Amino acid sequence: MSTPKPEQIIMTTGRNSENKIYFREQFGHFQSIRRNLSIVLLAIFVLLPFVRYQSQAAINIDVAAQTIRLFALTLYPQDLFVLVIVFILAAFVLFYVSRLYGRVWCGYTCPQTIWMLLFNWVERRVEGNFQQSKALDKSGLTWQKIAKKSVKHSIWLLLALLTASTFMSYFVPAEVLYPNLFNFNDYFLTQNWLLFFTACTYVNAGWIKEKMCLHMCPYARFQSALVDNTSKLVSYNQARGESRGQRKRNATKPNHLGDCVDCKLCVEVCPVGIDIRQGLQYSCINCGLCIDACDAVMDKFNYAKGLISYSSITKPASRWRQHLTYGFVTAVMILILIFWMASRSEFEADISRDRNALYRVNYLDEVENTYKIKLLNKSQQPKQFVISLQANDNFALKHQGEITLAGGQSDIQILVVKSNSLVGTQQIAFQITDVNKQESEIIYSQFHSPEL
Ligand code: SF4
Ligand code: SF4
Image (cartoon, rainbow, N blue to C red; front, side):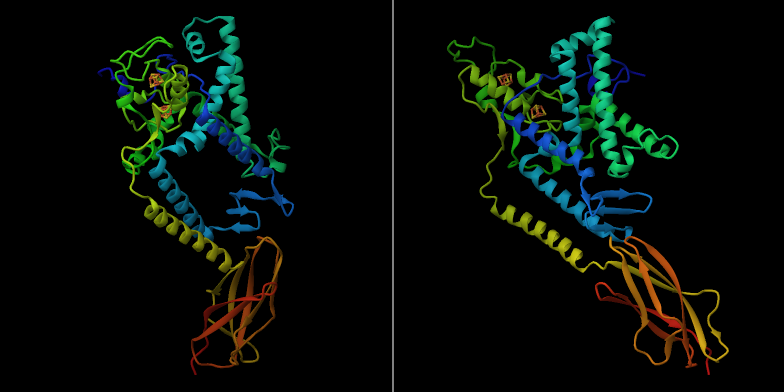
């Protein structure tokens, strides 16, 4: 087998410092936006499972019961439609933002980037700057290296465990998960999932890192189809920067050189390891780190900032039509969601006939049919239901149909309908009334009796 070229390698299994991207830490305008945003998003992710609503977890995904609780709303598999609308809406907004600003989702809000930069922050604190980190990887085994690596990986594992337990607390309420974290008898399955997500976070943020964005993320693959000449992407002003060349800080700029001082800082800070001066590249996650780095350099040389900036190839004449169209479609989807919420029934009823007997005749010569009624209370409060027959003198319920169900509970009731009319098969209408909300649903079935 021939040796693959470097650009053909997706991942290597061995510890190879040549394939690892060591990126310099950078501070600046865009990085403070990204950091503050990351802190807010992390705080939401960590604190949300602790929010209580009516003495229960406000947000909970119960896999066993197949429900998703969102404050006062409980979604069942029958409500999947609304999740489809929410996902379409989220994808639509993402596509629109990508069209305007490229992969800003990747650079500023994607969990992969946030955790990758968090793990990198830990690495910098433990191993020193990116050059010291690289030198440490290349050096032989020493006690100092063992100590530093042990500390770094222990912190990474702890962060991964915290991430996994926070993630799991969306499925198992925090007040149950945390006290039972070491209860190996009753929570063995939960602990296995916890270990799985810990391993995923550790490997993903600590080892795979930018390779996820470059080779595995599907969004990275199709995002180039979303941007056009008017999208604001991180780009290098070639006309201003070239010819690049090094020079002294306070010296007069040589005539044959552009503004790029060829310090390579923009390359050193790039988390995906590219040189933006080579033109737009699909792997750029639009994080703005190179802009902050270059602006700092421009400042030192007393040149104008913005050699690297968010810019578009052509300026759009006017975007108001675009904004209006996207805004209109988004508003329509939000209205569909509001309409769905307002018109959603808080119960689900299903009626099926007893399949064992078409009918039977009792000792009063009345014909009886048996029905199985399945009722689900989709609300979070107890509800009382009354089952009756829609006004029809031919039929009567043998027993009064009343059911009380706790929030989220379902039950099956057997109802017997009797009739004196012997005219073969007739349509029968059941009325199920939610007593609390005075809402009714009519369900049709068939009543069988012998022909005269
Ligand atoms: S080229 Fe600049 S914006 Fe793109 S990923 Fe690298 S640092 Fe971020
Ligand atoms: S940081 Fe700016 S000046 Fe330095 S190499 Fe990059 S583009 Fe040139």
